[in-house]
Length: 423
Ligand SMILES: Cc1cc2nc3c(=O)[nH]c(=O)nc-3n(C[C@H](O)[C@H](O)[C@H](O)COP(=O)(O)OP(=O)(O)OC[C@H]3O[C@@H](n4cnc5c(N)ncnc54)[C@H](O)[C@@H]3O)c2cc1C
Image (tube, rainbow, N blue to C red):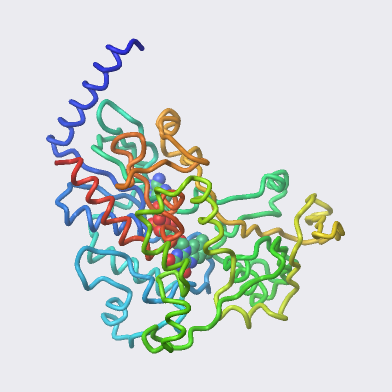
């Protein structure tokens, strides 16, 4: 397009965007998990007209196993709201339950109840529809719901969580058709594996806890980990951080992500993280909180079932209704492992291209780095008015954004940016 026409088109789009804002057309938040709910609470407080869509806490209710406990401590498991009274501790107090500290692993069902309690009080306007389609139109976005309703949005906040980014190693994709492989996010209930041999791939909390739950459900798991050993956290020395010896607090200061200076730095420095060189950001994202199990998981794993460390999967093939894995170790040795099922606890990788609810040309218009959207300090992508939060924002703002404790930083910044745009 010639430069003068491009300028005219940009001018028309900007004028239309201003008209859209003046007409009181809503900002749309997609997803009602911790990040969507916190964003909506903060947008409400900023006086922004919004519509939020999704089934509250559905990500936790359908993509996490029954019987799971949170790895994050109660003090780091609150969804952010602009006013006090909506934290996890407030929820427990409202239920007549006693206060709890770092030694209390939160059962997943309790956390889901907390999220719904938060939603009912702080974001009652959640509409229980799924957004099917988002398309850029002159100065705004056209939204289509699964009910068929179509309307215009001034801005869109994508807070659709982890599930769209579930990562399956490419070398295992060939097995998908056998129905003998799955990602951990596909299971709410692992008891159906009772009596089966299950190879669990991974060394993080999800792998170790899934293997423990499988074992306790009567299955025979074998963990296969690339790492030379599996790691577990240390139990806190006291229930409250303030009760720990001063030397411990100096050596390993407390942070929402756990004790340690590096964890404190990424928790406090989320805003600065964006300015680090790209290779450093990506390295820190994967190394600062490397794979490990919670302290309370150790006794449910150690000695209970085989954990094969330092192994990579060289090949995987179907064999007589089972899966045959060929594993190699760093010394070049190899061994075979036969399993009825292969469970991939292989994490999540942000890739805008996998967000099918964004129409293809809109996805292509989002500037990305390593598949993740490049975001401004206010969580806005290169497409004006299109925002991303939660895991999709972690490559920009660091590992803090992978956890519920990041909702405070994210929702404040994002709401301020949207409100400024809407003025
Ligand atoms: C096994 C496991 C254990 C974890 N443990 C912890 C922990 O202990 N502590 C912690 O802080 N974090 C933990 N996490 C990370 C945690 O899941 C995230 O921090 C948190 O859920 C992110 O919130 P979210 O709102 O971004 O995403 P989600 O909670 O995934 O919510 C996204 C929501 O968007 C909805 N949605 C998706 N598409 C659409 C659509 N088209 N229309 C409408 N709605 C849509 C989904 O249904 C979902 O409800 C864990 C993750 C996993 C996988």
